[in-house]
Length: 137
Image (tube, rainbow, N blue to C red):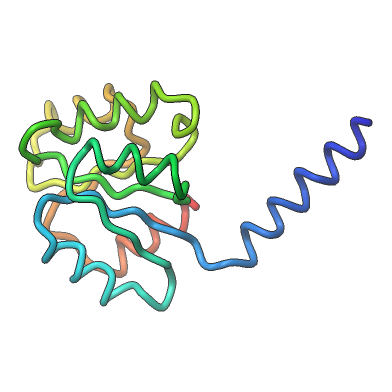
């Protein structure tokens, strides 16, 4: 029985690697989503959420391979959204990359304490972001 379970896990890992990785972009500014999806659409499939609450519902309904999460959003900010994702059984294992214009060490530390796996400061080079996302998938 353990061998069957291992074969199933291996198969889903192979299936995941053979399909285009899904990135959920969470940002209250749609323009940021458009820029990312246009620049990186050859490598990833993108979906969009405009708030922390819509992020959680989208991530449960159609789990992405990675979430790019803006920090400064009205209502539920990126830190609280990340905590919510990491404390929800259906989303706790999805890697989260915070993307922010806030660059202080305190802000970065707050991101990691909230549960993010990576913290990227805007502006960033698209090639650098591409590599970081690939490493998370």
